Length: 334
Image 1 (tube, rainbow, N blue to C red):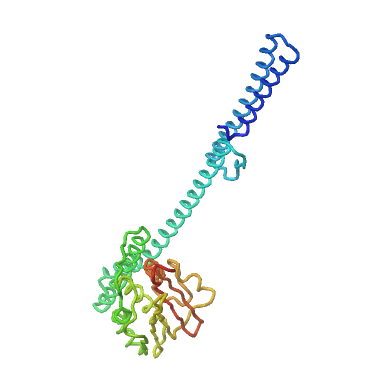
Image 2: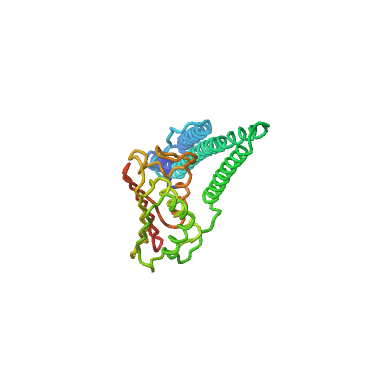
């Protein structure tokens, strides 16, 4: 209590009044009634003034809290004086700023959720519409058996696309919620590349793409082999899709005391410079996106790599290909 400037001032005022009264009594021989009455009036008056100021300060605090509750975010009641009331002002200000920031974060998350639901609805609407049209056509009696088989094949493709979309979204949402525990095991990069390439061998052969793998056999990092295969596989799939027949795909990897790096370079269509900052955003589809792309593969790649103490970036020139660099840091250093 004694830290408060007004309390110290009030005590000084009381001491001054009492001391002045005692001094007057000693020097002037003032009657006892006046010696008691005058200091009492001065003390009561000083206490009234002090109490009135305190109530006004408390009233201003109440008005501030009501204004914040009404949505105002521009008020500032902080001061640099000592005392409990000043501490209370600063604490209230910090709490209201914290609540305001949390409210802004919640609004941002709500907007992101709304956008995500809108994007998902849009991505699912296209294949559902296509399947509905084909299902209606299958009911027509004049449709030939060849057409029926073709429609059934198209429906299977659309169903596979929807399954991949839903599965990828579930993986992303689990990672966002911290529901996936990544293993900390020693991963051989040579094995990781070999196993990630397996699903892509047929499209690579069909497009006659030349694949070159460069790296020492003992290169490794600490991470999760299964999820790393998911990330590397998506990058390879993206590279193969955008590489012209007869093109080249180069995979190289190396390691040093700080990190293990994997580079995947293709001779494909490349990425326009203005699109590079956005390619890892969910549902973003660039100029050269293939038909049926939902723009979620690279977002999944980034989330998986970041969850394993790593990062991914890309350098690309339109018409000359792209280079994806995936870095896994050691000793928890980023």
